[in-house]
Length: 196
Image 1: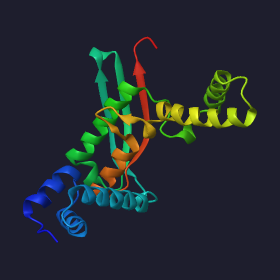
Image 2: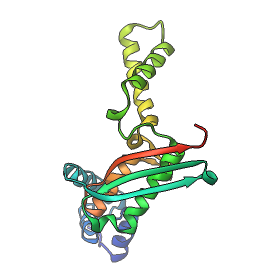
Image 3: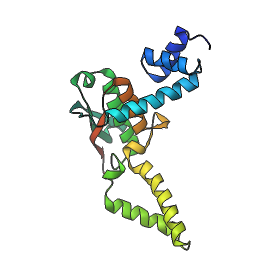
Image 4: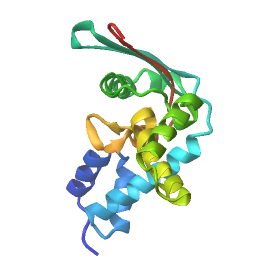
């Protein structure tokens, strides 16, 4: 087993934002392999976030972002469990980042459950029209596949984060839940665009 140095722990912490003890334990468990430690911490973060998902998030902030010289504006209500976390710079930065993302990516809903049935029906019809003439069972599978792609453009939580396209908004929030130790929920948002 390779020796776990303070520098290794600090580097891992800088990359993941996880606590010192968690970083040290992850490095021990992975015999000093940074990539394995990152994977382990990410899995732990997702598990932690899932445990916290049912907890009440009644505190938070209303944040805004104005873009393009006042031509696009976004307001968001981002909730957490305590006023203490709601007042942190990191929580405010997360709210600002999500606002900026909404300004750039124009989601129509927070999650797929909130996408209107009319939009879903219209998108399914368009997707089916693109594969006309194929057997019905194949058309259904193709349409389902196309709908997955459509959800990733319509739903905020499924969109790739504009600052890091390798990560969805849901993954960004999950990472922050694991780091801050509280449930974090996008309650609602509004996007305004001049003339639209």
